[in-house]
Amino acid sequence: MLHIDRIAGDRADPAWRERIHHLEHHGAVDEVTIPNADMARRRLRITTPKGEDLAIALPRDQKLFDGAVLLADDNRAIVVRAEVERWLRLQPRSIAEAIELGYHAGNLHWRVRFESECLLVALEGPADAYYARLDTLFSGRSIKGSIVTGDIAA
Amino acid sequence: MLEFAPGADVRRQTASAARIGVGGPVGSGKTALIERLIPVLRGRGVDLAVVTNDLVTKEDAERLRRSGLIEPERVSAVEAGACPHTVIREDPTLNMAAGDDLEARFPGLELVVFESGGDNLASTFSLDLVDWWMFVIDVAGGDDIPRKRGPGVLKCDLLVVNKTDLAPHVGVDLEAMLGEAIAVRGDRPVIATNARSGEGVEAVADMIGRAVLFSE
Image (cartoon, rainbow over all chains, first blue to last red; front, top):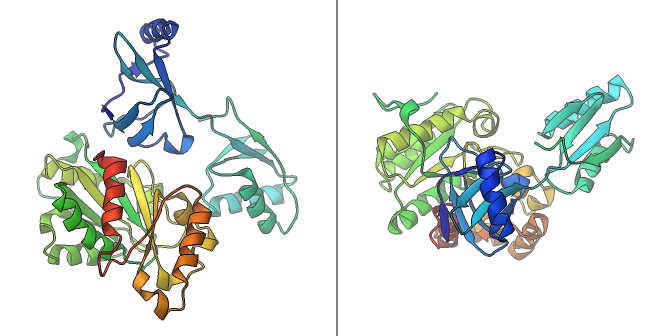
């Protein structure tokens, strides 16, 4: 078990980027993908692809982020890769439907963002479960939806 | 409303103890489970404190303080007002301050247990407040609770099914209920407990130890 009690740096910083890049050339960067649901945790047990059992316990004023360097020395580095967040983009067809959708999304405590005339719902489970809830709430009326990732990710 | 120790300045403190949440419906046995967990965890050398949440009283805090299981000053109370999940999810600052206050008063504290006020199946904890949380339901509350797929049941790190001793008295097929709980949670853990006898409590303590105290 390897204890991590702070974030050492950000691979996006020029100095770190060069150092991590150098280690990458030697196959010495262990990139651990952390599920989106776990990114807000200060304490976390997770095993890296190279088999390192990490026991992460960050101070309360630190948070994990994509590119966080958890450990780096002359021989290796361990870097966080945040799982890309998936969003369900819902497009109501009328103001009345938008109001209804907004009410239900709030009532269900869904995490949302707004994009033009669409409502984006963060997927914390299978998309089918969200569609099933909407079908029930809208009595079978369909709401146009699509799944998006990428630059919308938190 | 939060009870602060006189003179404590929580702003200077950087929290370092692990923080876990215990949520669940009214009467499911959250406080009873904590009463069982305290001696087990302390027996393993864990330095701990508790923050209780009640609607408009300090009932659970007073119960723990009177229990003799833990020094009364290690139990803090937050009055949640009408909506208990608000102070553990939407705006957990009162609870965060209570945890900071306990850490300031007890250097070396390793674990703070936050007990939610009794709530409904939609109750969940913010990960800004806790590192890991369990949701306690009970057999007498109905064997259909897992099937209802409430966010508390689905999203918690550990689902505890308490009061297993009552199953034959309330017409519940315990094995079937546990099977449904496991089915709706995928690969996430479920533990059956009887907080009156202590059955299953060691397993809950094992899980806390592994998840946030890194005991193995």
